[in-house]
Image (tube, rainbow, N blue to C red; front, side, top):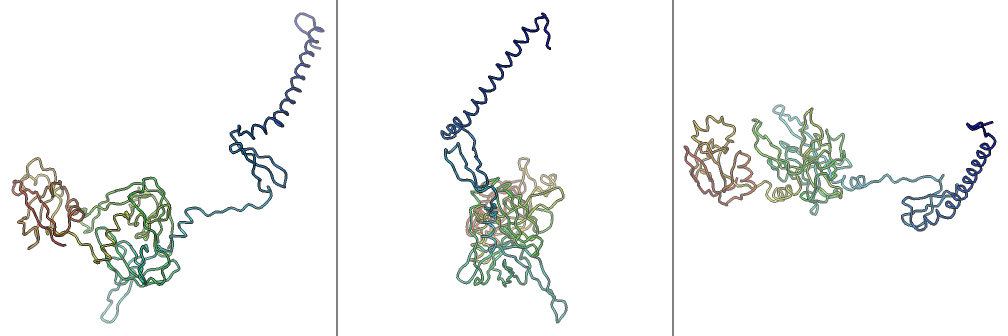
Length: 413
């Protein structure tokens, strides 16, 4: 028995049971109201598209009904116990299937005379190439210059393992591009050329090639464009000085030795770059580079037509002023204090355009056509990219501390 403070246990006990009756009544009303809402109101809410989620009503093993509140429609559901068919084909696999036959292996075969009677043949390295054009019975392949450099014979390895003897059409050191031709009767796929200029940083890309040799031929890696218009210094002579700056696309798609000359493609399966190099340091990961196809096409076209690049020729052996100790700028070259950089001439080739314009050793060039130049790379880029043989170039230079200017008619390198 429950006792309360004022001693009226009976009267208070009656109120206790009375309150419990009210709670029982409320519970019954709640159950009835909930059943009403579930049976009547919920279908109306779904039918009028007032719910923000999708409701599935199961119907045993025979299937079920999908009630989509966002679309106000009912779709038949698959049998819960029926086998599930999953299509694992994706955009990437479709692209690779379509493009893979156009990416080939390139083998550099070199020979060396062992003695008077014999010659030893050895593998000068392997790389990759891309079939970009087919003309009648001839197919054309683009690869890197460094892949075929020094080759006595070049072989192309197709996707199915077929080997074809290739002919070197032309090659260029500065752009690191080479064009090969092969018998096109066994070539079925030519890659589609894209537009590297409109590609964007962060855009997904796929690299296809033969890393570490032909044993891993047809390897596919995926990444994004990490950067555009990257300038990478190139040292061709091995003297520790930059001879050229390559303008490249940066990607984090894995590019390894053997990938050189392979394809960098976008998500439309189009060629937007020729894989060329990577930064190989223990502290660096995922930094590879490709030659943009928009810059490669003019070079490829000229290599097809002429077998080499035709460039403007000045005729000087020159070095960047920054390679000379600054104390010599004033003491030996007599340069004024306002000079911050330039190119000093080491020697002048006889009968060259520079010789005919009376340029002399130890002249310091500071401007070309009114544009400042600071390094030998600036000079080469201006000559090779801005000028053509037969054009004139205005050269501003210092000689014995005196500023001078001369106009030079360029010839062919």
